[in-house]
Image (cartoon, rainbow, N blue to C red):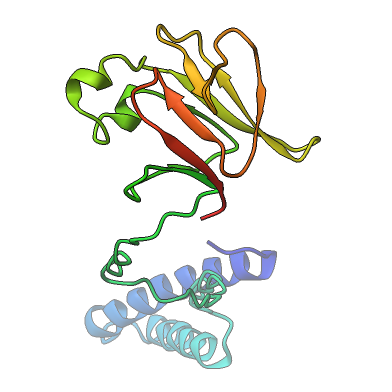
Length: 196
């Protein structure tokens, strides 16, 4: 589409020139041999058409400019692994803050600052018939950061918890020291040790 008045006029002149050249050519071929004045007019029109083409009065519409190209920004991303790395080998050691030990060296780890212990924790350490005397949640061992000490508390177990031979059921938290003996339901003796 022409955008300026000059381009519109150029297009109109080009159309008229093409029409005149076509008419002149037909006239030269058909009518000119009979009337010489028309031959001169036809030659004039043809020359005008050629001059318009030559001097650029007739401009063909320019192709629209190409659309602006989007700016390409290259971003380097870290390589994506094609496969997950193998899992680390299983660790044989357990990090714990304290432990309960049997006389033959078996260990029940205390791995959190507040841990409830019961039948499932001890059933592999005693005869199954004796393990039934231990409640599901028999006692809790916890660490008091303000006091800097460990404590044990019976969880209202059926058969009580002995600490160094004394039943602590219903007594609330009782301080627990290195080397104390804990006996859930009196069926298993465990020595309390701090650290791993």
